Picture 1 (cartoon, rainbow, N blue to C red):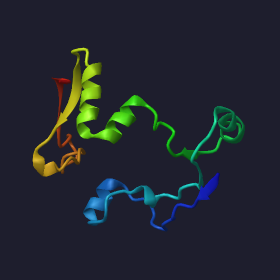
Picture 2: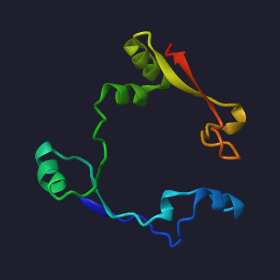
Picture 3: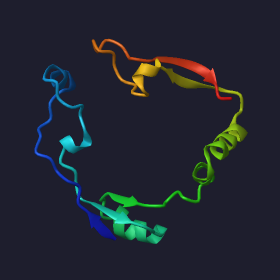
Picture 4: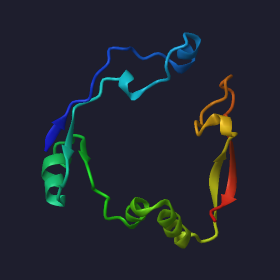
Amino acid sequence: MSVIHYRRLERSFRPFALRNQLDLNPISIFDYDLPEVDLATSLSRDEFETQVRSEGRPVLVKGLVDSWPIVEAASTSHEQLVAYLKQLDVGASVPTFVAPPRMEGRYFYSEDMRRFNFEMRDAPFK
């Protein structure tokens, strides 16, 4: 396995509300010191048990779920992914986030931080 070194930034953590007052960028994972993480492209169960689990350290295993049916469908096309998911539908409702297009998929809190900027509704999967 090879080691990836994530870049570290010297910015200190500031609460989100204070960041808004100071007109700073939103909180990012780069606001924190991140540990070095090993990268593995293939890892057997025995290797995982002896090299990763026993040492209690993080590792990024690329391609670990490539053979999962949902990943294969999604890798083929959007239509194949939808078809795969539809065959799993049992008619149950699913929690759904609904927000105006101006939110551009950014589900968070309202500007006054008193509520969400979206609604949660139950909707049928199909």
